[in-house]
Every structure is written in C-alpha cells, then in structure tokens.
Length: 135
Image: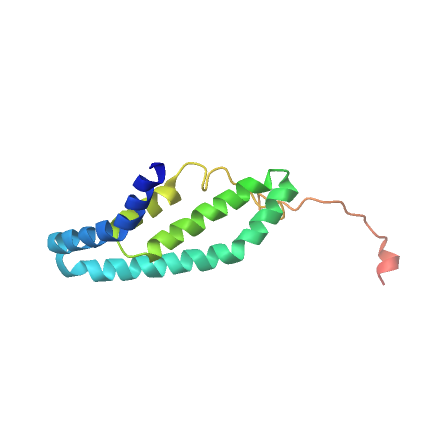
C-alpha cells in the first residue's frame, strides 16, 4: 500500500509532463519546442562536463581532507539535474533547476588545492646559485 502512491506518481509523471507541455504551448505558442531543445542540449552538456569532472573533484576532495562522499553526492546531484533537463517537460526542468540551485551544490566546494588562490604570487622555496656555477 505504501508503494502504491509512489508507483502511481512515477507512472503519472510522463502524463503530467505532457499536460504541462500542452499547457505551456497554449500559453507561449511555438517557443516551447526551442525551449525544450535548448534544455536537452544544456542537459547533455551538463552530463558530459560532470562525467569528466567527477574524478578530479573526488581526488581534490580527498587531497583537501574533506569527505569524498560529499563530492560524489554533489556530482550525483548535477548528473541527476542533467538527466532531468534531457527529459522533455517543464516539471522536470523546474526540478533540475532546484537541484542545481540547492544550497551546497556549488558553495561548499573547496577550491582546487593545486591552483593558487592569487595568480600573482608564487610561493615556494628557492636557492640562489653562485654566478660562476651557472656558466
């Protein structure tokens, strides 16, 4: 009985998306097709970018001392948002936008430990060699 509502919601989601598409087509006209096309392109690009970046993000989280599960959770949220953008419909677009703008998706990420915070300053040790050894 508990899973009955979940299954009903899951099966009615494409129907609700279709109703939303028809309602928006009635409201804004022919701009629905370019909107959905651009959403699908943005979703594919988001998935392709995150597919490449998740390994580096996981490595940087381990190097900076944070928990790697947080990096995987953030990557999973971005991948899920990309998948929702690929799925045609305005309800899934709103859910993807909520996933992308959710607190912690972008703000809690630590800076790249290999990239200096200030590009003008180079930190490190040096040793001055005598001029006669350089010739």
